[in-house]
Length: 113
Image (spheres, rainbow, N blue to C red):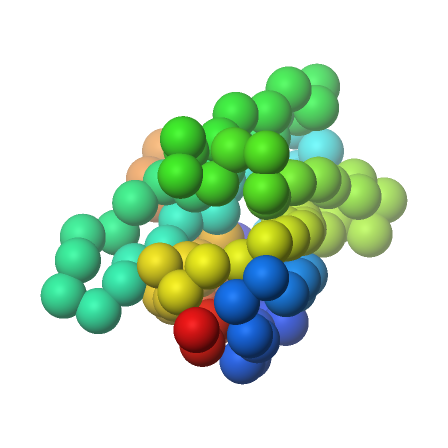
């Protein structure tokens, strides 16, 4: 299983950014996919999940600002981040659990105030 995240970078507070995660080596459409993030000095936290059926959930801190989605044909997971805040600054990881945890390399998102 390989997960390749992209789309990170720098944005001003209030701006938007979209992350992508291309998956291979798994039956993508059958699995729940997640985005996690880890801020400097903090533990990794779950940001959002999407099931194979398209059901979603979000951390309270990003609810109503972030939107998770998936394209099962392109085997790609997305995270649209809107109205971004400095506290969203973190390394973002895509994740899938298939008998064990698989993590993408992570992409750095920096939000300046």
